[in-house]
Length: 490
Image 1 (cartoon, helix red, strand yellow):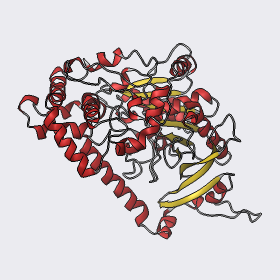
Image 2 (cartoon, helix red, strand yellow; image 1 turned 60 degrees about the horizontal axis):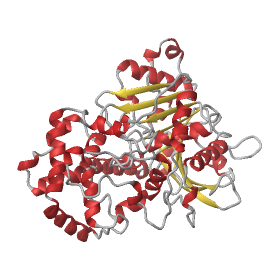
Image 3 (cartoon, one colour; image 1 turned 60 degrees about the vertical axis):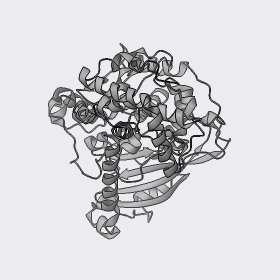
């Protein structure tokens, strides 16, 4: 369940931090190949990778963290607030760089949210055994201009950020580049490819939603009416109904919970609206992050105690999500959902007349001081471009993930591109979870696009496998930044 997942991830991140930082810098350096250590050219100029990176105008070091076999840097890069008018101010955007060797390909990872500052590898980075550049999305703190002109938070400006980082680092990392990301990160990778199609040699987008027409979301309703099994759907629907039927006692519990935590509800307007928003997320959030087998842990609604209903909703949806303190970090996402990206609007007919507010739109979750106006043509343009111009693009979806109901699809103009689905998969779907034939096809394509496919793989894609060994720290996926918990944050 979600709360348990958060706890597990926190532990994994803690272990990763201890492993990465607990060893002495000297020990880490000793474990690194000679190519990663400082060197001096015949002219006396330092060729240490850190010096080369920091010689890029606008690049500055926040910290370097040792990790065996790599150099890992947390950096700031000076970006224009408005790429169309660079003279109108700048801001500092956080970047991390997992450096292996300039002779290896590089993967450009974007979560679409904050960047993790602990060493990690995305799946494509492990597959190609390469370097990884990770970028924090603009307006997610601390990568936010001050003062914040929210009109400069759009997908084209964000693509401009990526283009400038790529252009700066390509001079050092001259081999092939791939871009990747999951969920909003997969969307971000797609938008970057649309606006700068000559930058990357391939795109690997995981579970990327594609809400082409924001006001027509019946596809999601049909998906939720058929996903999983009827038994599981009935159990989930029953708990959700009971949470609204028992609104009075459960809201009293919520009121005490909020008081204990110091939570307030200024943005959404009231505790009642926040409570209902959490409950309305319940069914979607289950399918987004749980598996069919997890239905065994859902209580029988009519005989369940109030505490059992509370615990189930909290573990899956999270009662902190729509408090001011839970929303603040994600204001940039809700702003984008309400101005360009779109967001699901589902009916949930099994609730009857129990809902007071319906499925609340992104505007509800953004402070009223920030103006918003939806731009309906933006996602249509992206969708049309992918259908007719996709080249070296791979999409991976989970069969039971609601966000996959509206996905990217390839048209007649697509070249060397694929859309695959993980059977029974959720919003954490990966290439590794695909059926063997599709796994091999996807892995071989990634290796080929990166320019590192071994001869055996070129002759027979079925022999494709990751070039780097699994690392329990680097390859522990950090869902706290890569995929949002709660369906409103893809």
